[in-house]
Image 1 (cartoon, rainbow, N blue to C red):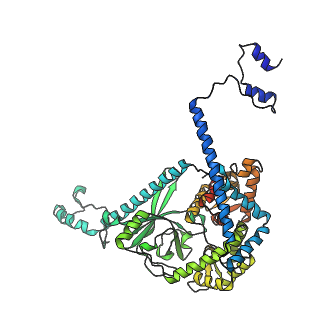
Image 2: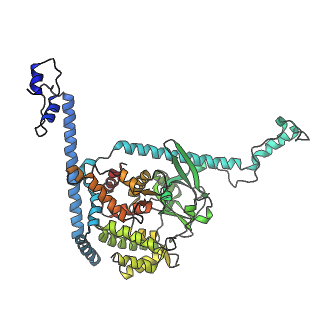
Image 3: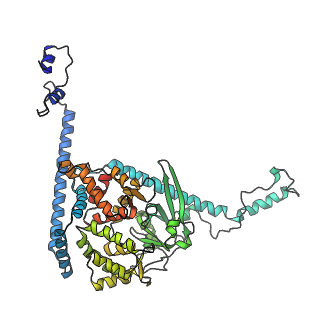
Length: 525
């Protein structure tokens, strides 16, 4: 007699759910649904219908978006603009046939972009990020106002003139023998006289912006900087926001309030203006003018900051008032045109093999830098391009070198070389790269061990894992293999190498949200 018949003959025995018994007796048998289950209520019917509609709509949107992308890429390839583009497309087709195993393993990461299960990102996280960002901006703005308003009052010696005259009659001849209550007591004695009195109204006419340091040093690249440009005297200041744990924060001056000028490029020597504030703009400062900078930052002669976000409302209102407009010179426009043409040419060559070539190029240039200052000669760059089969005509390279070597010393930073000749991902994408690295580098050392990366990487949501064609371990090992190939050390990944890896992946991804999925899904950010 089996268990089910026993349970049916004796009603006093507790009835075990038939689904569990069936699965224990015969694993191959189909799941049984108990006949005595109550009918679903209207509430659950409605929920099921809403879920079904949402899933169907999501799949439809996903398929339509993929079809549009495929159509646009086909049209782009079938519309040659000139002879140079024809050669570029033919080269890209030849490269596609020449993909290595490492290239194919790197391209597996693009699968996260084509996953319909992650089309809608968590709105809860994005809302929390917005609230945290606003709180940070408000905290920094308050600290800036406190610092500058307090400094103006405390450092003005005239504030003590009237009080000294009133109290002089109450001081006894021998002040050292007088009781403490009759002595003149002041917090400090200062001889600094302020040139102008700042008020809250004057300081309120400002534009706030976020920035980051352009550096391959992970600690410096991940510093959270917030700047302010004041229109009353065309000065600017930059503060660093630090967070220790969840609740403790600190705001400290990074660049003191002053009037500064461009230190590089076509506008070298010209004073910063409102027109210089836009996302992607570079602000350059001489490290020698700021002795309180961290030692790692002072290693470079020029400190370069990249603006990542701007308060557009304040900027537009102040621009209207001052009627200031961006005056791009013909030389600057020509420089941008030359760089854009070279970048488009190389991106077509790198679309499929970008990870292997770009990361290899970075390692090669780093090895050529024997002095460790990041500077290389013109011949080194030409040889590197030839070695990695990145074809640039002689005329284009000469025009490019004139732009890059604006100082005329015959040498250039290899980081600037890569950014100029290949281009960069936009600041929206770059912000997620920094966020992912900051999550991995919890000790803020600027590098992460391969063991920690392996622990944090999660491939559960990869389409091949969901469909059963690959296991999580296979996807993870493919990622680690391609990442290790990009690193100079086999057991450690620096911020620069991590950024280069995703920079090369970014070349083959058109849509920003697809890139965000590629980055955020395996790292859980």
